[in-house]
Amino acid sequence: DAGVIQSPRHEVTEMGQEVTLRCKPISGHDYLFWYRQTMMRGLELLIYFNNNVPIDDSGMPEDRFSAKMPNASFSTLKIQPSEPRDSAVYFCASSPWGGSSYNEQFFGPGTRLTVL
Amino acid sequence: GQQVMQIPQYQHVQEGEDFTTYCNSSTTLSNIQWYKQRPGGHPVFLIQLVKSGEVKKQKRLTFQFGEAKKNSSLHITATQTTDVGTYFCAAFYSNYQLIWGAGTKLIIKP
Image (cartoon, rainbow over all chains, first blue to last red; front, top):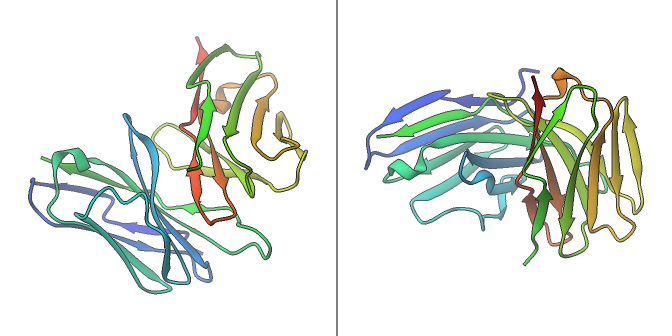
């Protein structure tokens, strides 16, 4: 398996532009997670899905952020409009259900977003 | 709401010394996971603890889950340069909430 795939790996955009980050989870995994990592705030969980349904989106910073999972093999995180403070590394992770509990998360390589 | 405190934020050690990081929750956990992130990399799963009082070992790494399932620790014996990175705990709660610790950065003194 190729692992979790994220695109693009790097994105540089100007303030006010729309940004779309993409993630392909590992086939067969039931859970998908979106994270943001910065030096100041560390690793933050933004949202996670179970079987394409959002379970906890309490970490989504504000209405400018939205996430979708239209099917089991694809998810997007959209920022509109983007602001310089959104600059961060965004990780996607997927995880199989462990039967009676959660299971390990497999992280993608991340998308480094820079908003000028 | 639930909170997870991970300490210390940084730990500087000489190679060969031990390292410990702790995670403490204000409420009972369903289970807890530990991850390691190397500089410039992504978090990589180390282990999951589910049972009260559970202790697991991976070579020089020892993981513990408290009896009350509110705290956990990761201990590395005789650190090596390959251990450098940031160690995170990820706490799962029965209401499906997932909270990550702030991470402990292990730095080996030259």
